[in-house]
Each structure stands twice: as structure tokens, then as C-alpha cells.
Image (tube, rainbow, N blue to C red; front, side):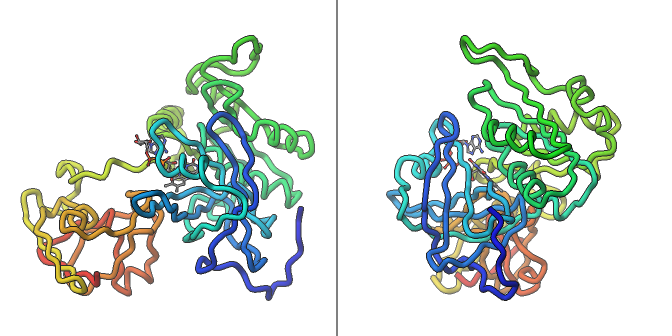
Length: 356
Ligand SMILES: Cc1cc2nc3c(=O)[nH]c(=O)nc-3n(C[C@H](O)[C@H](O)[C@H](O)COP(=O)(O)OP(=O)(O)OC[C@H]3O[C@@H](n4cnc5c(N)ncnc54)[C@H](O)[C@@H]3O)c2cc1C
């Protein structure tokens, strides 16, 4: 429901914990959690942005980043829609333990994977699994605003019963012109006939689903091999990749870095030293190590979330020295100018002193 807010109304800020108000099962191992601010303050975010939640799991807090699956046009609450993979720790904790009435600390919103950043007349949204969440937020916003839309909405799932938001999207598509839904599944559910696409999304399917794909702004979100195959398919079809945007949900393994993966910013074999001024600890490490890994080996636990420079949880203040940082939007230029770095994607050069 659209709720008119006075322009001057104070907005939610992340120093106020979020209250879980409801939990809705969506499909196997997938739930939507709805949060409100206890103060009643409205949320301000862009469709497609994310929050990072502090999860009080046994043994210490874990930080997990989740896209806001609801739309900014409904600012009195926000939802996240989460899928627990096998072996999940954080997301599984939410599904098994979070209940209405409980509070969670959150940081954000953040992120630049949003249609507001890349306005276009025609969109092609391509997602797999829980990667549907930013597309849901962006589509709901366009639907709520009543704007004419031209969206080809492609979602891939293992089986039809695992397609998240299928019924809600189908309902929207009956009430708005220009929302064209395309489902692709690996296999049908038992005893449930399936007449949609089946198999792996490929160039042929993309051409059939959106013959005018060359004119569309493409947003893609899903596991990395899936996004790689979409990139390959589009590039092979002559698509201008300046109009392709993607969000990665999956963090690389948190390990000492593979030197071959780094560009000339760090020197293979070179040694570095990180001084943690407040604690008095020192870590001697390689320039190819991240500050996060080096801190951990010195017994200093920097809170972190995505491990790929997206969520901003591991932001720390550098007092002196140089790092080579390749982030993915989790830190602003102003913060960098003030001396902040993201520990997960910064590599020390020679000697670095941190305010930790
Ligand atoms: C910007 C951003 C937005 C995100 N939005 C969402 C969202 O809307 N909904 C959502 O469910 N998740 C989202 N994620 C992913 C989420 O933050 C967690 O990384 C993911 O849920 C796994 O955390 P976990 O605690 O469940 O598993 P962990 O305990 O961290 O890992 C358990 C196992 O799962 C594997 N794994 C970790 N991440 C993934 C993954 N994404 N896919 C498959 N296997 C994985 C690991 O290799 C490990 O074996 C987002 C991540 C980012 C960076």
C-alpha cells in the first residue's frame, strides 16, 4: 500500500535496530522476513539496494548481506527474502531462530545495483534462485508507480515449485501492461506438467524471450557460473556490455590470496607489515594478503560480511601507509579521502598503520 509521508518526516537510520514483524515461507528453504523500525520511521532506499544484518549466532556475531526485496514505494516496512543453501550458517540461523518481536542490528542501505542508477525505457531482468530479489524490488516499484513498463523478466530455477515470487509476479503481470514473465526450469515437478522453458538458459532462449535484447538495459543476478553464461551469451550476440549490470551474492573463499589474481598494484613475493595501533599488535604478511586475513592471523577479528568489497562491513581507518584496494562499491570516495579502507579487498604495501 502506498503511504504518503510528509517530505520532512525523519527517516530510519541504521543506529536503530530492526524489529522482525513477520516471516513468510516462499518455497523450500526460502522465507521472506518483514522488518519495521520500532520508532515507526519510514525506510529510504533505492530498489535493488541491500542491508547487512548482524546475526547473533552462537560463537559471535556474523554479518550477512541481503537485498531488500520490497519496494521503496512501501516505506513503512522492508523485507528480505533469503535462501538457505546446504551448510548455511547465517541464513539458516535466521530461518531457524528469528521470530516476530525479535530485534536485529542492521547496516545500510547500500549498493548501486539499481534501475534508478541506470534508467531505461526497456529492461531485461535475468536472475536465478535468490538472485530474483533485486529484480522483485525494482519491478514492484515500477508497478506501484503505475508507470508504463517494458520489462522482460527471466528467472531460472531448479523446478517450478522453487520459483520465488511466481504468483505475486503473475498477479502483477495481470494488472500492468508490459511485464513479460519467462520462467526457465531444469526439470518439472513430479506429476506437474510444465509448458515453459526447460534446460539451461542459452542464446537461443534469450533471442526468443526478448528479440529486441539489443535495445534493453540488462540486470543479472545469480550464482557466478550462471552470470558468466549470461555474459558469454550476450557478448556472443553482439550486445553492448556497457548496458549490462550484475550483482554477485557469493563471496570468494576467505583465504590467503592467490598472487596470480592480482594486478600490478601488489608485488608477488613482497613482504608487508601491518601495525594495529590501538591494540599494539603487528602482522607480518605478504603484499598479496588482504588486510582482513592478515588481521585475523594477528588475532584481530575485523567484522566482515561479503568478503568482496560490496557490503562495507569491514571498513577500517588507515592512519598511514598505502594499500591497493579494488572494491565493488562498498566504500564511498569521501570515506576513502578520509582514510578509510575495506579490509577484505585491501592489500598492504610495505608498512600500513591502522586505527584498530
Ligand atoms: C550484495 C549482496 C546481496 C545479497 N542478497 C541476498 C538475498 O537477497 N538473499 C539471499 O538469500 N542471499 C543474499 N546474499 C547472500 C548472503 O549474503 C549470504 O552470502 C548467503 O546467504 C550465504 O550465507 P549463509 O550464512 O547462508 O552461508 P555460509 O555459512 O556463509 O556458507 C555456507 C555454504 O554456502 C556456500 N555459499 C555461500 N554463499 C552462497 C550463495 N550465495 N549461493 C550458494 N552458495 C553459497 C558457501 O560456499 C558454504 O559452503 C547477498 C549477498 C550480497 C553480497
